[in-house]
Image (tube, rainbow, N blue to C red; front, side):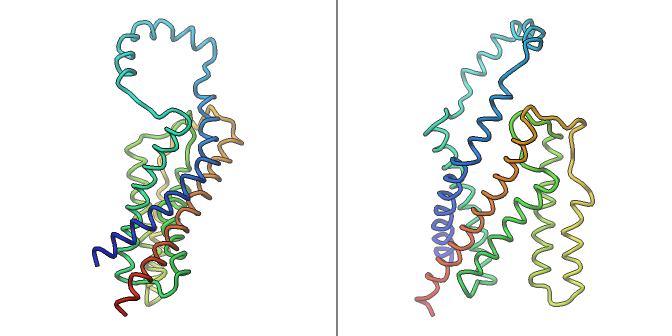
Length: 236
């Protein structure tokens, strides 16, 4: 069983990571690069005002810059993104394969439902309160956002589980309550909502991120269900 779970997660994760990296390279990453041009361009007044501070901290910043590394645009950025996506995709693949041992899909297309459930849990529901952010966007405290994101994901997973597998209306109503609780509490927000990038670019980035993640989760769910059904056939 452990071998089957690992094989399913590895196969599905690799396929989904390739799909995600391709979509990000074609749509999401160009939007991030465009937003970075607004983040890196500073008004002349701010440059003059900050010149003295920059001069005082030049040696300190130089030591950190020498140690810091970030992938350059091009193949380095694509490779770094692809490897990160692979790690995440295999992790989610392990989660799906483990759930399949409890309630395996009878048909490959049912893997799409599992994938969409993962999309709703880890992307759609958290994005309702904390939408994807471009560089240069004001945000609330990181720790508070992490707490809310984790709580929302757990509540959404529990709520969807009760709706899908609950045997009576009381459980299903409880599932609806779980789905609503994080949004009734509300996500932590910054004191002032502001962004260096234009509003149209922000909206396109949110749309691109959500659709890209929807395709990723769909591919992951379908691939995991297909591979799990193939590895189960010989023992039947």
